[in-house]
Image 1 (spheres, rainbow, N blue to C red):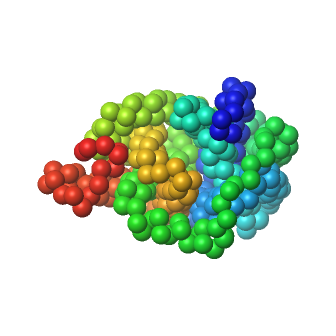
Image 2 (image 1 turned 180 degrees about the vertical axis):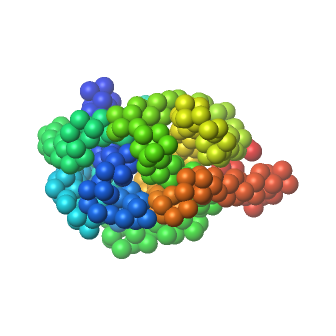
Image 3 (image 1 turned 90 degrees about the horizontal axis):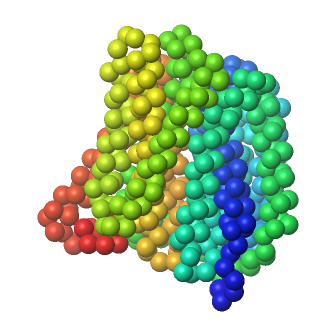
Length: 408
């Protein structure tokens, strides 16, 4: 839409709302792992698969569906993806066995990558001078969807059942699909590259872009710990130590939204060339988020307070590092921006899938503290990797480029 009127505020609001509602489907199950596994007969050791398979599906979609945004008409691609997601949400809602729900979870993740087609669509509709502002507003909607989905799911499940959560989500996504088909203009990409070559270019970009590899590794560690935390913590909160209802867990998840305040702060730090230091702070926040619950005293109230603080601190680290990573890779060229973003998300969602699976198993087999140590280890490994960049900068090595597009 270059050389034309800029995107309207109403369209920005629609796209921001759309991304939030789409990605929410990925997170409804996080605070419902306990009731879903109990209802479907999933063993405690395998409960983490409820979250893991959704993330695996999302990774597959990022790698094999999102690149189609450079080949196929975007509005139709988004509409098709949302109808598929709605179908999988219905399957989840009517599931009465573990295998049935896990298939649905994989499909929900696969279809929800439509959100990563909507965001570049917003950039396309916006004038270049305001493109960053527009994309920022749309991504803020995505963050709200992530943060609000967990408490909303808990509240609805407590008042009704977890089946209603997924049934209601199916209705919402179906309505959204038809609204977007009616409101979005058509967009046919100009690329003539074949689909196999497009997929091959993803691997080439990953191999030839050190900034992408490093930023993806950092966030894979943080997002792995984040997924682990939100897989096992609801189980802990519902257990004999805290005895929280789904409403109580919803309030807990809602408080964690405070961590989103780190996003604009991280963006400003990156704009000033402080990406290296800000990344270290984000990773340290992740470690602190797992250390606080481990030092909790015997008092139930104090332990719960520390866990609340831990959730906020961890969410701050994750929100900040996501912004830092996207800013770094978005400086590498507009012509590959969508594919870079797809690879970035795919890698760190793979870390998230590993974190949720390992966390669920560790919690069931070895207990709460073992799960916390595992989460801290994810962030610790990322921080050790960050130290190699810091040492490289200090030594003045030219082999490691600046990750913020500015002098170190």
